[in-house]
Image 1: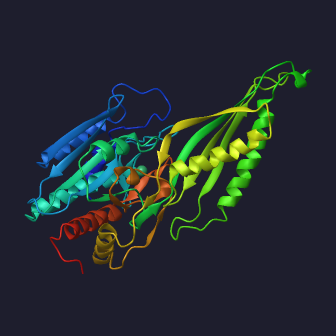
Image 2: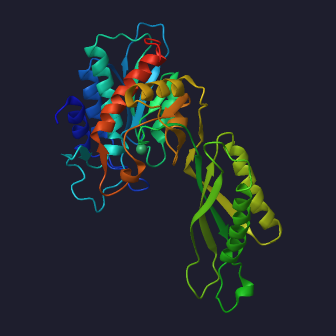
Image 3: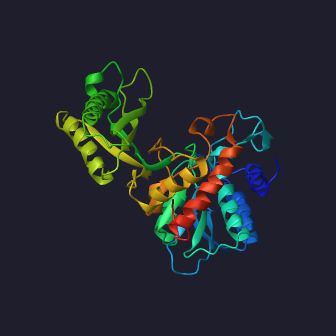
Amino acid sequence: MKSKLLDDLADMIRTPSVNPFEGEMPVPAPEEAMAQLYETKLAALGLEVHSQPVSQGRRNVWGVLRGSGSGPTVMLAGHMDTVGVEGYESPFDPVIRDGKIYGRGSCDMKAGLAAYLEVVRRLQDTGTTLKGDLILAAVVDEEHAMRGSNHFGLQGPKIDHAIIAEPSELAICPVHKGQMCFSLRTKGVSVHSSLPHKGINAVNHMCRVVVALEDYAAELATRTPHPMAGLPTLNIGTIRGGNSVSSVADWCMIDIDRRTIPGEDHGAVMDEIRAVVAAVAAAIPQMDYEFIIADLDVPALGTPNSAPTVQALQAATTAVLGRSAEIRSFSGSTDAPNFRCEAVICGPGALAQCHSLNEWVDVTQVEQAVDIYLHAVQALQNEVQTP
Ligand SMILES: [Zn+2]
């Protein structure tokens, strides 16, 4: 089983691009080797290569296959970073066995980045000129704060239709929940624990907030669900506070993850949560607190089923798989809404494998993805009539 598609994917697996999350930013940047590799491959295909710095030495790269100038701009986009490899045996040695290719990033989502290159190769092999431009984009930092896609959406070229190859087992996902992560800190006054009435206990105050947020989360479950994305949720992931058992705690902190559904405005959601905490504080004269807004704030993806990208992918999956792929919500949040254009997720591989210590992707699915993208890109460019 040898092909340029698999060679490209193997080259990318061999090129570590582990996102450091909150850890220290390595020099060169974690995705730099991948950015250089992708640029080389884009250039080898004769594409116009572009790059934009994002932050801390990290940069997005993309290639443009120019069309004849009369069609929409279609983008195939993905992230270059991967999750960590602690405990992973040989994460950067691609192995092909039993129709699967193994290695960190194989599924999430270097398979997609490799498939995009193959799409261009196939267009060129068949002498196909598209009407509009086709852009292949590789961005940084999806796994943590999604800085790459956010930057691309604000500063990159204007895109009409985007397909993102996050692992959906080739299901068409025009929708996913948004994600807001932030912290809340209560502040007290520490004194010896034998005189608690002389201090202000930040842990006690936070407990009231936690209960109020639990009620708020229960109320979210009674709202009208989005037909595909379901209900909004709130989860408190961590709590910590105080310095010793014999002191009144002068601080307490929680980390909150609020998942939003298409149609929810993140500013309005934050106002709801501020109101919940303000109501608790109104009943406790000594309560002092502050919100700490973190980096992660990704809106929900809410592309309508009637969007041309959904239609093109439906036709493409029907042609390639012999059946229209399932249309559903994607689990988890992705770069897609940050691109600020009509975007749909459809990619090879399953989420179950992608952050595991034994990551793999089915080779047949990667090949089918190529055919699906090829079909969809041409349909979006009106080069071919969809069946
Ligand atoms: Zn991913």
